[in-house]
Image 1 (cartoon, rainbow, N blue to C red):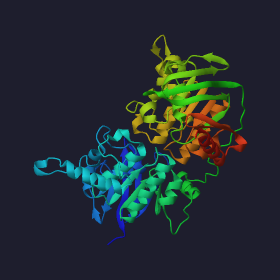
Image 2 (image 1 turned 135 degrees about the vertical axis):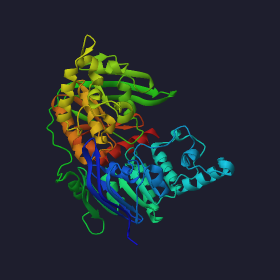
Image 3 (image 1 turned 180 degrees about the vertical axis):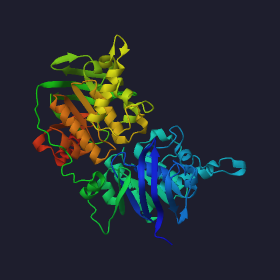
Image 4 (image 1 turned 180 degrees about the horizontal axis):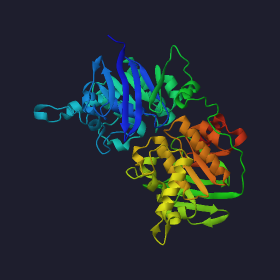
Length: 515
């Protein structure tokens, strides 16, 4: 028998005459963790959707051999019957169903006359959850009461109940913190020890280097090369070279800071939880950002960085909000998002799909919607020519890969969606731009392009805040950083002292004071 559990040969897939995949070949060995790497829009998810039957046989050309047999899947159910299970980046759980119900949804444990056997369902749910490290979890609680990390593990448990032999994980750690990510990677290694083959799509190269046995690089819809852990150079720089087609010697573009006067100042800012008026989330925060300056907000997940940003942006988060906002030295009242936009404050959300975009609408409308009244309408009439010209300008300026500005945003890759959100807020011509996890879930090439945009905006005199869970990103892009811990400012670190060690020291020392 062949050592390969999967062979995909000469796969070609077109969308509206544009080749998303062009003669792609992939071989995956039994029992290995095989990583798929490539820039956003390279074709990784498309290839896996073909394998799993999301794009059925006949909509592509090429051949798929699984366990030595030719496969012509017409839908995802057929691939699952063969033991191929895909876990998408957007989790497919029913939020209001219980954990046990979600584990078996579509794969119910039934008894006489097709009636669900709840005793067996609960027992088997507890058994399979224990295998992914969720032993002792209350299986009757709704899934939406859990964090994203546990929801990812429930998806894996769900896959294991389908007798999975090939598990595909598409960006499984994109929305997880470091601890949750490490736990998920360890689960993958445990699955490998049980003989389950995994295909991992990820932009986090350090994670790929840790768990993967082989890496196939896809660039512009073509399979470029496969790297083997035992026989080839398996470094982040080597992977990046394959992805972008060149050496990326500096992941953060250089910027000469020309810092001016204070643009935004926050004084004694307090915010209470939106559902618990007695729970203080942000306490006595003070900070300032100057023209041409990029200021980082560093801290652990749950420290209050996003809550702080959203509360400033028109009270989008929280209740009983108090404190002062000063713009260019003058106190302003900002109680709605409309007030924030009017006062030239923009906020790029960390959740681009829920809060940043209308996925069923096109690039042009998504770009203009926040600035429609202020910059594209006159006496209530939209200047459509201006709207088109501005959309074309920003599509070219920040290199959005799309057929046209009429293309639906939902059909774009994650990195290109992020660029559309960025363009949307740049078109409001803000003085203050808050970027919340601006590069989450996107590849190194797209990250570099977004860093260049940040530098250009700073050069124009914008005051920029970057919230990031990636400490190297804070260090590489910011002039200085505030460290946030448990809703407080734990410290302020200047550029020449901005290191991961100093950030963690601020967090730890603040935690000690709180106790």
